[in-house]
View 1 (tube, helix red, strand yellow):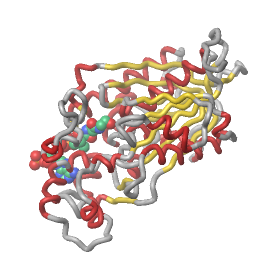
View 2 (cartoon, helix red, strand yellow):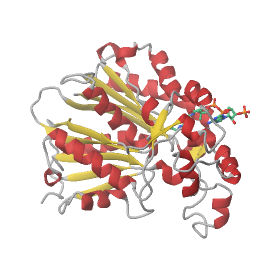
View 3 (tube, protein in one colour):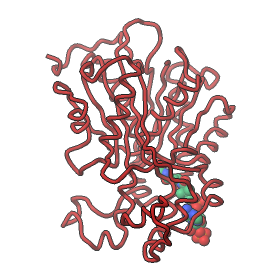
View 4 (spheres, helix red, strand yellow):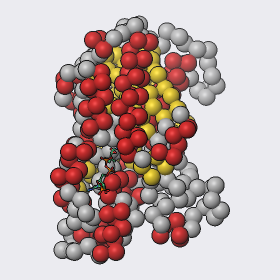
Amino acid sequence: MKNLTPPAKKERTTVISGSGFYVPPQVVTNEMMGRIMDTNDDWIVPRTGIKERRFVEPGIGSAELGALAAEAALADAGLTAADIDFVIFATMTPDHYFPGNGGLLARRLGMKNTHALDIRMQCAGFLSGLQTADAFIRSGMYDRVLLVGSEVHSGLMPWPESVWDVMLGKSAGPCDPFWFERATGMRDRAVLFGDGAGAMVLEANAAGDGRGLLGFAMYTDGEHWDKLYVPGGGCKSRPFFTPEMFDNLGTIPIVEGRQVFRLAAQLMPAAVLEVLAGSGRTLADMDLLLMHQANLRINEAAQKVLGLPDDKVFNNIQNYGNTTAATLPIAFHEAKVAGKVKQGSVVVFTALGAGLHWGAGLAVA
Ligand code: UT7
């Protein structure tokens, strides 16, 4: 019986046997964002590094993007969905309030005999998923886990399709002044995020070859819960949702940007050093650091704190914006394709996000 916990198999490690990602084809440049709000390249690039992001067509959700990324990761691992024992789906932008995306993904991939777990830990969701997958695999509970991080942030943008059409050049514009003003009121957040999905296949490795996920240093500090959160909607409110919440932009995330920036630049490097030390390693042993892609300047600050040369980090926020739970698997796959992750490479993942949750994980690829 697959779902009864067997005795722990301590000799097992967890290897990343496949990875892949999917981003929607629609590119939205900073100039295009500037068609519907008061913003431009000159503000966005120096402060964030972001040049463009992708947004889905209406009607496409994060479960579907996740399925497309999962198919790419399964193909990379030489497996099919039928080979997977357990699904972990990390997202903060699920298709529905419930059920979560895990079951929707399993249905979409035709999985009939798979248990699926949903994780909603925002920017740290994929890292937490890696830790969870590793614990299940090392315990002997499962041999093959599919881990997906996927987001459709465009669903959080409150404007109507006529405004999207102006942004995308499908209508000549100008943008309705009412929506231009409202969008400008959330420009500090709207320009940061993009839609996308990434996935990994994690498998048990009993070869004793030193490969695998070798440690995690994970933290939560709920004192900072209100630095990043969505005030409107949720069962603490009765009723759950009111039209006033929408009118007051209550469904738009609050981002205390400067405080999060400062915390990320301190706490991610500390977690990286801790996880390296935990496996008896130092920065000199690390081949590549993959950081959550929230802001290129945060990652440059963290790189500076750690004194790392450019060839030990990899950033792609320039092309995708912040894709929340999808940033780490997308960065991992692109770094792998670029030849920066080879068998035996020591790769450290780190992330910080709403919760606050943060941490680091170490893998020998
Ligand atoms: O993954 C975790 C989630 N991510 C984060 O929490 C992001 C972390 N923080 C950051 O990346 C940065 O704090 C931001 C990029 C969000 C903001 O940078 P900032 O330098 O802290 O800017 P600010 O929000 O303090 O705004 C400075 C000025 C303001 O104008 P005034 O009041 O000085 O006249 C803003 O209205 O820049 C204005 N501004 C913009 N102007 C043009 C804010 N957003 C924009 C924009 N375009 N998109």
